[in-house]
Length: 381
Image 1 (spheres, rainbow, N blue to C red):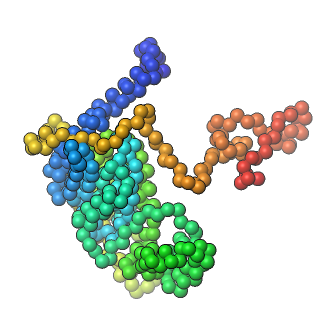
Image 2 (tube, one colour):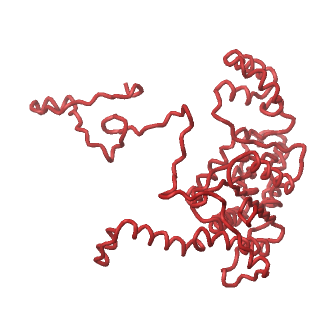
Image 3 (cartoon, rainbow, N blue to C red):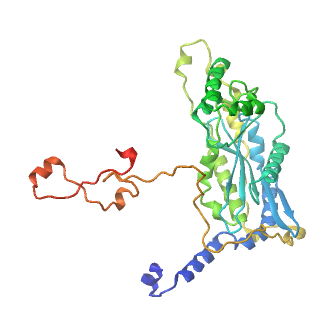
């Protein structure tokens, strides 16, 4: 509003400014949220046309209303065969008008980079949507006896984490006894689940030191802005991100020197897994993700062109969408601490508290009576 006043001398209300902003966003993001859903079938057709071998599965409910979407790119399907067989899965909420949930399956490449495997969009995070997504992942990437799935759990106690990460059986029994002594009710539950499902020492397959879904948190941070986009623009941003990653990592990584191996009769490659070799790295990113042409040059069958896809069946709430997540019950929220006055609730840039003079300076200025602020938070004392 201030910019319009300064540049054009026009006073506009907040609602007019907001509608103008949304109109500009619609032009940049392939139309309004409703138009974006109608455009999605044609976009998915062009995605498969320009990236042969990719899998696209769109499911609708009664009345052609959007229900589920599943997309693994052909480059990801090929590259996963040369990555460690440990898949991390998680979900995060979308922030657009019709909300929804993004399901993601990722893994690590040989250089510890995020390797995207599959993306899914559903109406909500529930048993039905998770079952649908995991079945699609299984149908595309197959069943491997050495495959390990890592999913996000609730906040874990320190004893549990140490027990799960124990390398050998002896250490596990010591830590498991400590865990059960601290929380007796978990013993029966953890044993019923199966020690091979949550412990490193009993796992029948190699987890390659991948025990958490922190990799997904990194991906979530990259997608934090685009989660507000309409559905087609959102899918396109995911494709652009994956296309960029595959292009940048197509070159071989730098050599890593193992100083200790130099002093032994062994070669470096004799002591490492094939997943860390140059050949496997090259095969991981051998395939590329192709761009999609401008909408004006799309060639779409009439059946897909006239398919009237409707948005998710949700009630649009008036006002801005929530961007900050709702804290869990019992979760302690951190508050900023000022580095100037040492009080909490603000930072140095917004601090307005007077600061007491240093004793040496106060001796030179005996008339100074600036008050001293004592810390109010227990951790500040």
